[in-house]
Image 1: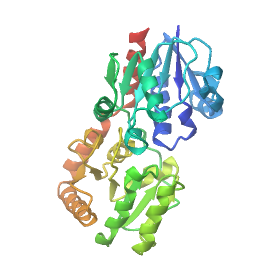
Image 2: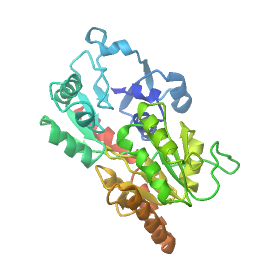
Image 3: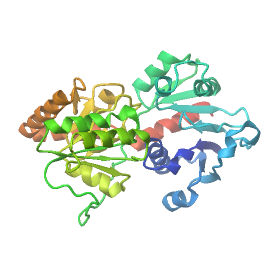
Length: 354
């Protein structure tokens, strides 16, 4: 029996992109249990995970001090999987190492100087890797464009859909109940999400309201709030903050459209969640999003707010005229992203190193 260590401490924030990825990867590995492999999960959420997975996983309590070389985990595992490229926790021993790369946004957002500590830490992870997985072709291409990637096996393994299972919302009443037509978006409040453009688009969509969900305690959220106030949209734009899975699925199902103008996405989970409900999806025509949306999504040609609004109106008109055809396309695209398939591919990567 071989043991794989999963450095999954980002699961502590289950409503962020990394947190969602960590949790649903564990779910896939649980459902696709391989009798030859056991897993140790690095986490502070042992009780939460044990309730979900029982004793399928072993658990190693995460402590931030383990980022320091002298305090690294000394146990010898058969494979160490760094499931997020941003983690500072590394093995003490020379262990077969799988690195999953979601994006290299930091090369633009922090520094493009390869001597910067953030980039040096990433380069160290690259050079340690015995196999590299990427969550999209875009993530692979952008990594190669900015860094010298070692000659090791590389794989593109798409994420699955967190909303594969639809929740029972029969008697559910959302905290933010918006009557009439409304648009919905969700994500971390980082500048790259471009949420302020959705606000600036709203004066040109007078018949619609807008809900943006996500951890809006970041500095960028203030810019979004300023635009709401400046455009006098307080009664039409709601910043919902963090919401439950039930409320997320409610809005993905009931919103007139899902809107996601993000500038940089290594993958982009929310669009496939929306497609799972047959909801029209409008995306930036950039980075990994065309991979995710395929021919099922609508794409903004530019970020001029008035033209963005025009694209939304035109797309919704097309959707209404050919609703069944559009819905089937959305459902088919969403179904192509499956966590069981992803987990099976990761298991093959592990086995290739064992």
